Length: 379
Image (cartoon, rainbow, N blue to C red; front, side):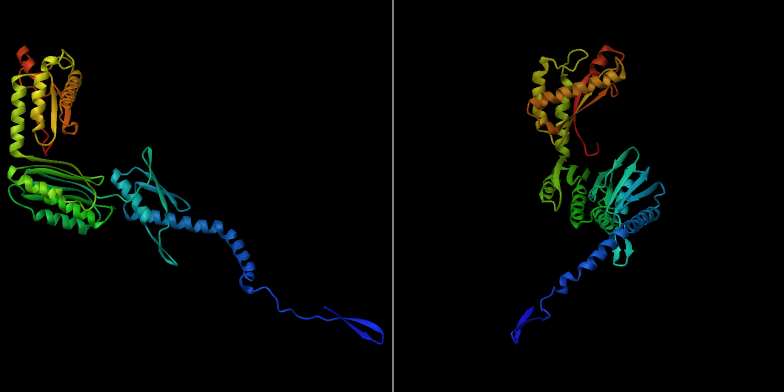
């Protein structure tokens, strides 16, 4: 600043300098040069950092391949993405390798880390994209005294618990032994899935013959057993699942199955459903017979298979197609008469299952027929 002073009639200007107390604080303005240096350093280190990341990713992928004996596969990386190529022995092994590469960890100065963020696979002719963690799936089948446990589970502890539960249900001769073909692989280890699996083992072990399936988080059961045990099993199945949903439940009391098949066989044995020659068009004269068959089918348990059979005249392929078409035509006719569509299947057998001599006109007439049977647990 400038001060003015007066001396003997003269004015004298004097410039005085004073230090101001106002200044910019170090925080945050003092960090600006440091941040600038860090930006320059990061730009310079970019290619080198990417190289380190890719090196860790490829090392992780190759180590996983070697540890799992996957010499059929090779790995390539771009950043933290890995591409797998090769021909896996099975689709399950291919999917398992994808999951293992994605989950593999490597040590860093901050601890263990997962260097791979995404995995693609070129297996055969298509690209397999990684999906969410697989859910457990299984099929438990009781037949001829053997309960076979087949499917995928997350660990040996789960496997052992399921086998032990099955062995506790042994009741010869109905259930005499357990066949363990469960596969330990990379699937969701949610304990609720194990609860559903134990629930299924308990259900199927009550059957004389049966199959319990858990697929796409849907539980289904087909079971043959005496009428005296059917109500208890129905109550057991009605209890809520801890995870997933109920699918098709077919409880087939032995007595009801026998009554159903006898009734249908009697109807179709005394009168044939008539078709136009070499055609799947049902003759109108069969309308009353179809109504009787529909009424009997409604009283049957489970799912019914409509079988189309032909004589041996013509080519095998033509007979197969004709058998299929006639079975489908009968299925449509029964649905129109009130039988639920989801309880009916149609299948053509052509001339493969004759019941009489195809060398005579009478025998061929017997072989051209429709049969309806209950779909059994062993089918």
